[in-house]
Image (tube, rainbow, N blue to C red):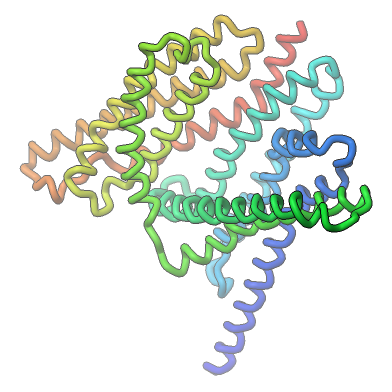
Length: 401
């Protein structure tokens, strides 16, 4: 009997790894087909441009394949069919919404194609990452919103960290390979023009393929070693971001780089703010936090809130002076949401401090804040959904009038 169970278990594991292998292979198929069919001889740079602005659809399929890893295990035990169904329907809904809210508008208003590509598709490509992150987060918790998601944040955070490191290494390798190709291989070999185009496509397709399979591989690395590297990296980043925020305040003394009219500075200030708040979700103040970490978790949200007031002021100013307002409005709304988020964290921290003094808790044993802040991620999800699918329709029709 036990031997049959062992054989059955091994069969399930084989089936599981076959399924994962198939998902890895097909996750990059839409992007690679797009590359293969694109005429690089006509405009190779246009390929990269289109890949970036249409990345929503490539991301959607890749994340859809990836989400299955969080719904099943190697023995196919405790497979939650409800989770798989909801995950599938979530991605299907996003795909249909994107088709029905984007394609008709683009085709019916051809004179607004540049506006469509630069203001709508880029927003969707960036904000969709938040939506996909939340879907995977929920899939890891069987779509039970009441479950504490902080462990999933740590798990996914580690996958992101290791995937980023692996992607950077892979990118450096490909840059070196392309350098050799341009300097030596291309010159040595007398290659026909159409074959050159094919080789360039194959190189680009291989890059896309490697980048798409990295998260799959890292998933099993994190699962095997149960790493918590993202927690310690996040804590280190708090000190770095604090320094950069101070530098940003002093930079205001130099008028040409103020974020109110300097677009590059505006982007940098917002990127720093977003990264700062994002880091707070991975720091896990309840996990083996020392006194310095707890102090930083108290001080940093206050510093970030002051910085957010500055950035919000710049966003409102740019909404007033801008002609194409959708990007500026979306950023201003995001700044407001971040401000509310930071205020909420500060309030929870104050409650923790009061509780420490009230109950005379040892600072080494005390926990600053609580895990309620993780529920705020759904607010960012709602924001991303609105500005990815609803706001573009409203803005296009208002602009057309």
